[in-house]
Amino acid sequence: MTATGGREAAEDRVFAALANGTRREVLRLLRDGGPQPVQVLADHFDMRRPSLSEHLKVLRDAGLVSEQRSGRQRIYRLEAAPLAEVQDWLHPYERFWRDRMKGLGELLDRMPDDGPA
Image (cartoon, rainbow, N blue to C red; front, side):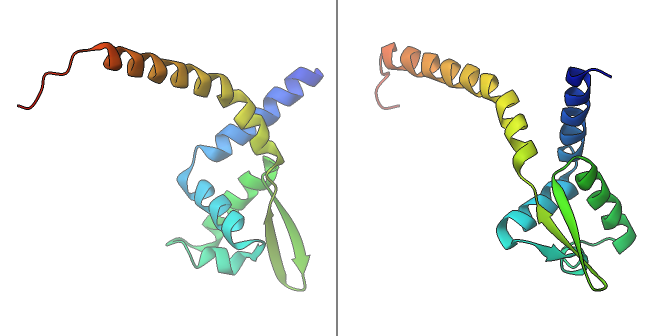
């Protein structure tokens, strides 16, 4: 596999991980609350712990979280670096929409006001 192919596969794993609302919520919880044990994360969801563990595995495989064992607990931590690649990918689209909205604003500014209805 080429370096580009490996990078694309890693990006695909990140996008696939972010496609699920539960996984996005896990990332939000870790962002806002810092590293947390699995049970604390599980308390936020109406699902069995093995189901959450599957979501955490997807996030780990995508490099979005890391796991540290502390005794019998597994502590999860947000690893935000892969999100920079997502931001890089989204940036041209953000610029596209910003330019479109600017054009719309300019068009609306040129239109005459109809006055009160």
